[in-house]
Image (cartoon, rainbow, N blue to C red; front, top):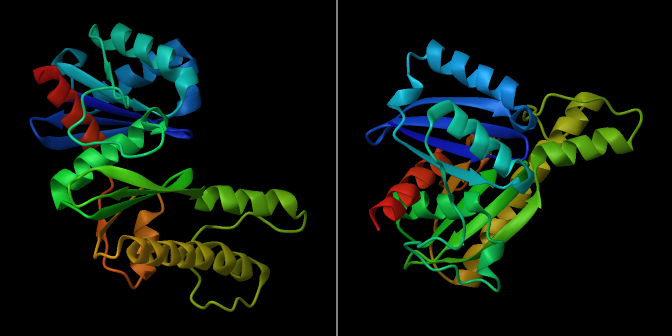
Length: 256
């Protein structure tokens, strides 16, 4: 079995593959990873609940955008599985080029998205990850990463609104039935969610104009299903794209 670990700013996602099939996923708060004992206890209990032995894991790949937790997760995984994990970085031997000003700045999660997205759909392609930030990855027809956009995520935008305006409550982040809200909650839901939708569609329109080509659009990340349900654009939902990319790149490097 293969264990893919996606360390994000808020949550860390674990994916267990059997051959090429993703069999199990589970999440821990990334903050938990600073506590080795608690993390190990959670891993032991989770593996037991899904009837997977730690000795079943033969390879481990990690994508991390939180450098401060890298040493901790490395030690946790070695203690748990007794195997070294492989970290995805811009300096590994990639099957595509990073055609940006400084390739070393490209996040591991973006690299994994590019690898898995292009393998599944070809190019040109835009992958939009609705996570802590909303990140757009643009891939050429040849499969190279040519740049993108990083914008505040939906949750970040909502929290900024709650914190800046004393009278505004926290609201469930869903689309209201109408754009024009009739109370504070639907006013806020409309402003947060439709702004995110229109920003997404507007940026995609700009990308298409700049590339002067048709593109395929993949949506991933926590809010991707909500955006997909409202957009007029043709999109493909891929919730586990980073995990799949971790596996692709780890196994590619292992063979070299």
